[in-house]
Length: 491
Ligand SMILES: Cc1cc2nc3c(=O)[nH]c(=O)nc-3n(C[C@H](O)[C@H](O)[C@H](O)COP(=O)(O)OP(=O)(O)OC[C@H]3O[C@@H](n4cnc5c(N)ncnc54)[C@H](O)[C@@H]3O)c2cc1C
Image (cartoon, rainbow, N blue to C red; front, side, top):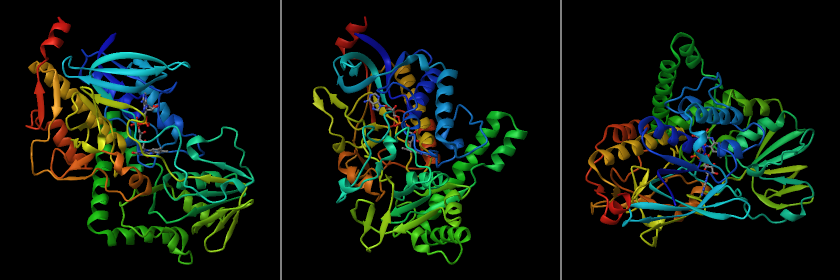
């Protein structure tokens, strides 16, 4: 059976980043990337809806080790995909990807100090097995098979076209059509102004509003730094500027929600004027109880001002032949209805983890430093921040994995396992968002503890000091040398 030091699962933004870190920081380690799809890029290849883009800036969504060089800070999907592909080629990790290898099971043997990973490949779903010393899961956070669609009455009666943004039909012609987009999250907010450029009219139908904030698509200061400084220095400076301003605004929102709400409301008023009903942009929850929505150069507000888009805050009573009947009695006629109703949050989609013959029950585990599970040896995962760019955390996770591997090599250890050895640790939900997609999945997710290293900081500066500079032997991570069978096998 083929054996490598590390198996990375997933060739999205995190998997490619993780592989580059391995190349840079653990040059002696062998690794492969197993990717279930036939291409790399994950999210940025899967989502094809009009206008698909990031809503964080690319100076923090990009990798620490490779500057983002394009002028737009909030980039479109194809540009992000290009960045991932170019990074993989530049660091020569693209050759390590095994496409069409969907991992279904990974089982750890303490006797052999290794994981056996089973992946289905090819049209026949032939199972191949590989072994590795360390498993790094970069599989994202949602189900790729399908997005979330609530159960609505009368759905089958609608004579037009219904589309979920996760499965966008390549040939969908919406020019001159009446469109209703159901939803108020990042996807709806992105889709609505993009479709309004060609549609007859777009209605955004939301059950409850989101906080929507406009930001410049281009960061003038970043572009100035790029003109006067070397590439890397300019990138680092902008990255830190954005990390610190993001942290400041997040903590303002949590500590002084009233001030933050006032600032957001003022921004909306400036864009739409005093006549516009503010209820459509006044959520009932506090800022950052759910993710904020960012719009580049106020594109959504501009489309509303120009009359190409309208927002309706109401609930669906039933689908009809011609569109929707709302609870208020209002009717919305449509040729196309887009259900931007979210993702199905799922960790390690359809993959079973087993430790010494016992399946890992994720909700019974605690997350260690936000990247490993209690009592699960030699396994890390890459899950980004909920309140800042994904890659900030995933870069730190990969860096920590490399530190851990180098530490184990240095001291002759083969097994590392986070152990809860402090009886004062209390368990808490791993995410404190009240969004529907989080609440629906919470019972399937691991938990976090009340204290470091079991507590998620959701704060880059704190994580940086813990993961880059904190002690690897912190009294919580248990290290062991290779057991006799494993030593015998290696010899
Ligand atoms: C439309 C959209 C916009 C977003 N915008 C932002 C943003 O602006 N800022 C931000 O911070 N975050 C954003 N996110 C979150 C986003 O998912 C991350 O930024 C990031 O792209 C995730 O990268 P990833 O590599 O961790 O996961 P993914 O992109 O999901 O990639 C995971 C990869 O793993 C593969 N995989 C999964 N399971 C298996 C398996 N069992 N075997 C083999 N391969 C497997 C998948 O095929 C995929 O290629 C956005 C998400 C979406 C859906």
